[in-house]
Each structure stands twice: as structure tokens, then as C-alpha cells.
Amino acid sequence: MNLFRSVLFLPADNPRAVDKARGLDCDVAVLDLEDAVGPENKAAARAAAVEAVRQRGLRPRLAVRVNAVDTPWGADDLTALAEAGAGLVVLPKVETPDTIADAARALGGGARLIAMIETPLALKNLWAIAEAGGGLEALMLGVNDLAATLTTGPSPDREPLKPWLAAVVAAARLNGLAAIDGVFNRLDDPEGLAAECAQGRLYGFDGKSLIHPNQIA
Image 1: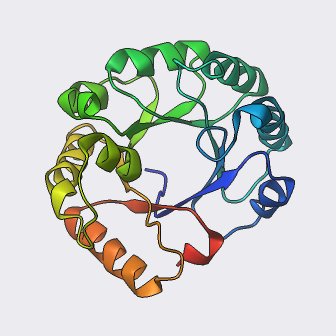
Image 2: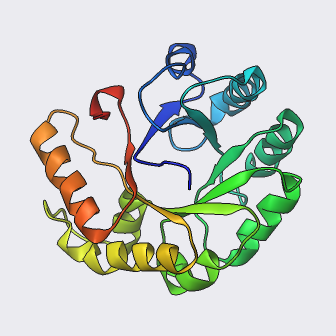
């Protein structure tokens, strides 16, 4: 199994961030076309991500998070990455196994996929999503969007999300997938990050999503 201990998101419309992806000491660098990029920059971000994919030879392993398939940009993201030969694609807002199958088809079957679990419907269909196949390699818990859709309050120990932390790990294990924990938002709290990483390990996660290079262990 490929390593997913540290999965760092970087905005694809920021040339400095894209350039910084080369040589970072994380397992996976994700060029983000979704949350980190405004509508006016979607096309430019896509072009930058495609160029990075075509350059190959990047260390760490390179992934691209596309926009959700039901947005104006999702289909074009998948088409462009298929043409570029992307090897790893992060799919946000996955709610049914059909999303996995449709993305795999659009990518030509050559890419590995990470499915983000971010909504109550995704939780309802979690086991079916994990069994989808189609190049699925990992499940990633999108804690920010999930907490927002569940309308849970802030909690330092993620108490309201604990059932879903365990469920994502269990679904991943049953299907031979990696399980990736969600992001830690407070960049000025390294002790909090360390505690949440320890919690994730306790639950069985294989790694953690990161939002800044300073969070790489």
C-alpha cells in the first residue's frame, strides 16, 4: 500500500505553492482546484495542475483535488487530468459509489482515487462507497464540511465526530483502502496538532490531511 501519512493540500492557482510541492517531505502533495481556488481562477489553476502532472518526477507523490462533479468545473477538471495522465485524483463531496464509477470512466481508468467523505449522505452510503472499486485507493474524512453539514459545535477532542472517525477507518479496512484523517485548522497550535494526530492513530488512520508545510512532521 502507498503511504498516506502526510497529505498536504496546496492551492493550484499559486505558482509559488505549486513550485514548493517539489521536494516537500510529505507522502502526498495535493494541488487543490476546489476550496482553495476562487471561481475566477479555476481555469488557471487547472492549467497549472495539468502542467505539474505532465512534468512528472515530483517527490512527493502528486495528486490533484478536482471540483465536485456537480459544479461547473468538475467535468472539465477530469477531462484535463485524463489527457495529462494524472496518477492520483482526490474526489470531493463523494456521496454515492456512482461518483467513483463516473470519475474513473472520465479519467480513462488509469488514475487512482481518493474519496472524500463530507456529508450525511456520504455517511449513509459509506460502505457502498468503500466497495466501489474503480481505482479507489483511500477514504479521506472531510471534517470541516462534515461538521458544517451536521451543524456540530467546536470541540477540541472532536467528540461529535468520533462515530464517523471510527466508521471511515472500519470501511477502509474492510476494503483494503487507506484511511486519511481530516485537517487541523489551527496553524498556531502545534500541540493541538500533535494531540489530534495521536487521536487519529488511536482510531487507526494511516495519515492526516495538512493545510500548511509547517504541519509536516
